[in-house]
Length: 95
Image (cartoon, rainbow, N blue to C red):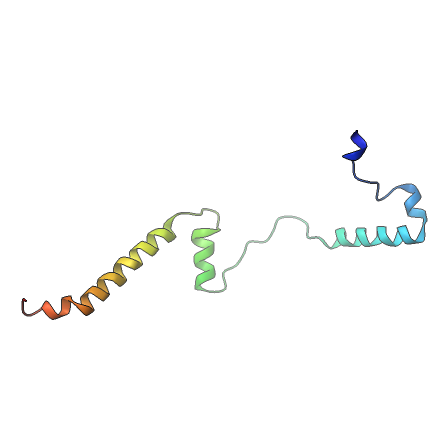
């Protein structure tokens, strides 16, 4: 019952003695030797969008400020379009 859960023995004493198994074991050891150790380094921003993503989305303290920025940007762009296409004609005289 338990033997189906336990993985097969990779480094068994009988497998180390054979040439093919020893080569396979060496590949496993070299793979694990190349893995990084310790904490991952802090990511550095390389531009504005990387800085924004690290600051507001994936940094130490992610927040909902990108949604506020999108809504604010849509308000500004909407008013600018409304002014350009309609409101500037009513600046000095009424309908």
